[in-house]
Length: 281
Image (cartoon, rainbow, N blue to C red; front, side, top):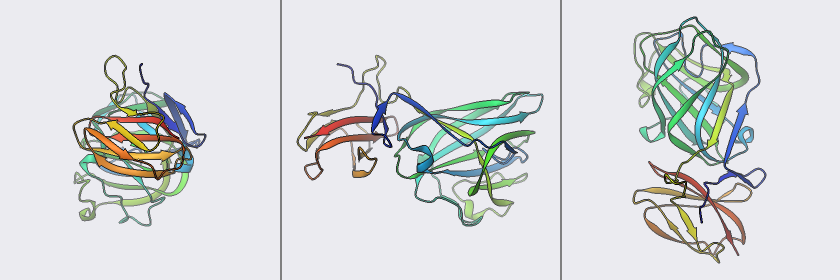
């Protein structure tokens, strides 16, 4: 019997196949996010709170609210990073969140259309496993060596945006501490849509490649994983993390110490992001 990819709505302990979370209703206009369009190069980090998202699962795309674009379309070479983080703000311009290649969810050209006012989307190369309990960091590195007149809608949210930009130096996102150009901590956080769901972890017929069994169980659980390093994280129905482990291939878990109830196991590897429900009796 086919198993659908489940996305966990922890705030209500419900399940859904897809969900879009919209954050921000402000009408202010800024050129600073999702990256600074007035500079040749920029790197920008934004923080969105778990209390604003109230959801967990695989994020497959993100949309930003364009407010104004010039009369020609503009394509930028960007890299998008995502991380689960505990921080809720930036203290100063040196208080950046380090990113690595493992945090990349998109890399490539992104086109902003001409004469447009509305949402524009970045579809990820690799869906991101958001855990629903930490805050969410979104960083965008822009590398196109040009600039354009583009404005995005933002909502005033103090100290949640960190922006580095330059017309001369293409920033190294893995060595931000050495950057000596313009830096700013601001409140111009972009209005955003987080798009959850998708066919992550499914085969071409829609069959989930992952499974947990027996289900229900009494604490002894087997889970079939890809033959590559995976991160296993288990949450209870309140969205609280209760277990984590690194593993690959067929894996046995001893969960006898958990209380009886409904749980959700999220598996993340380079190729797979999937969330499954199981019951411990």
